[in-house]
Length: 100
Image 1: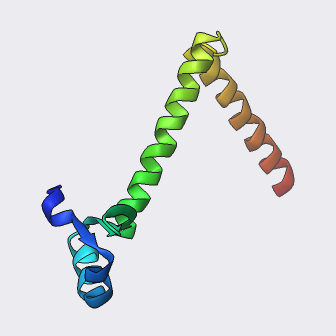
Image 2 (image 1 turned 45 degrees about the vertical axis):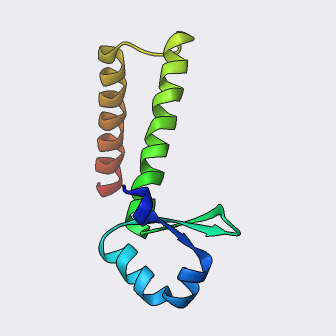
Image 3 (image 1 turned 180 degrees about the vertical axis):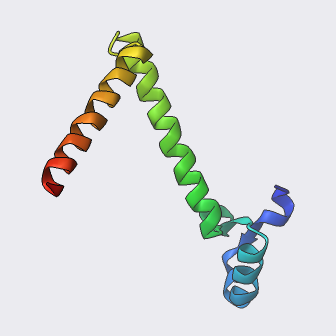
């Protein structure tokens, strides 16, 4: 991202709103909008925003997983797979009973 092209004053946004929105959307850009010379808001393509939010969610899950591992709160993979298989088998039995 070139900051020289990504920072615009609010006056520019006001006078070129539809052009700016079209450019941000079509080129998946992120713009920093300034007010009185200070960065105030970010204007971002919604697809980029969604990807960012998904990345943040994954990072939170990863951080929580690391914390759980440090605390010893985990199961070996074989035990986890066995637990999942048991639940699948129980679900299948319940479904066959419902269909009978």
